[in-house]
Amino acid sequence: MLVFILSLGISGNVRADDRLRVIIETDAGGDPDDEQSLVRFLLYSNEWDVEGIIANRPKARDKENLNPQRTGLGIVQAQLNAYGECYPNLRQHDRRYPTLGYLEQHTVAGYEDVVDGVTLVIAAVDKPDPRPVWFCNWGTDNGAASSCLKRALDQILRERGQGGYTKFKSRLRLSSYDKFGEHTDKLEPPFPIWIDTFRPEIGGKRWYHQFSAITATAGGFDVRRDVLKDHGPLGALYPTNTTHPQKEGDTMAFLYLVPTGMNDPEHPNWGSWAGRYGQNETCPGRPYYWANQQDTWQGSASRENTLRRWSADLQNDFRARLDWCVKDLAHANHPPQPRVKGDTMRTISAGQLVELDASDSMDPDGNSLRFHWLIYGEAGGYKGAMPQIQNADSAKASLVAPAVASEQTIHVLLIVSDDGSPSLCRYQRAILRIMPAVRP
Image (cartoon, rainbow, N blue to C red; front, side, top):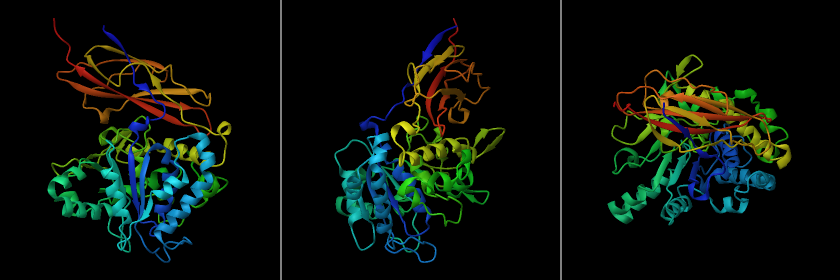
């Protein structure tokens, strides 16, 4: 029986040239859930190069929105100021957190009567940086301006013609609501990839509404204890007067991009803290995806499981970052770092023994680690009887590749959790390309 040692590389901080470039566009001042999502976004701002924050609602909506600031930009700036108060503490935990000054320089109004948001988008996309720009529109409704990305694309097409438009559009990726008009589904070429983290409606339930239903109390999360009370000025700005408890309807747009070791934003079917996504049937032939997939987990199959199975993990991570706002390095918890020996993708033969070794994994706080290996069947192409992982709850595990008649893929996911408070986890994925056994 053939044997190879599988490795996934080291899961530490993402290298600077691998960090995603991200722009968010929010209609803060409407439904207060934008402000909820913005609290979480700022606590994850260390994970990306934040190219811009665009506020596109000029006037806060009376009665529904109770923020003392009455413009979208004013609401965002108030949160930035609160972030600035937390920044010295946050920087103890990760030096990649952007300064308040940096975020202020990259935060603009996107109102109809100003061009600041459009200018920011064009400058970011035109920047001589090989990395594309991920754009996250959080949805807009009556009283908000048109999306600044739509306005930027209108301008580029008008001023640079089809060739310039094609080049500009190729530099964009969307994890976003659709507020871009004919640029999404009529004007060629299509966006290189669009992940609609808001839809579709299945069984009368829109996907973005499900974030609240699934995560509001996941892992024992309590918004008053874990966010509002004794967690600094940023958490204190998290509003609670939303239609769904802790609604955060816009959070999945950027949660999809958080580098946890499980997700790859270019592969929506692989899974993420924002769920798992499949081809958008309403846009045939285009690389557009939405939340229409199911995971089988704990005896049931549902779309909700694509998020529910990770809900305690992501809420514990949010809790830890709120702790970072007020606790020093020694008294807060930090994610473990999975370290497995070998390549992230290997070609193997049917019947081959695969040894999985994560014994080099470490925890920055010196906490004890728990290991769990699983086969993420829905993410891979192989749909036969899944092989059993031996010693699946140990640092060292193994499996035997199944017999196949043609090339197939199996995704093996490692989950490493610590015993800190709250317990945190990170993941690593291995993709096994299984080839039919060669007959002598």
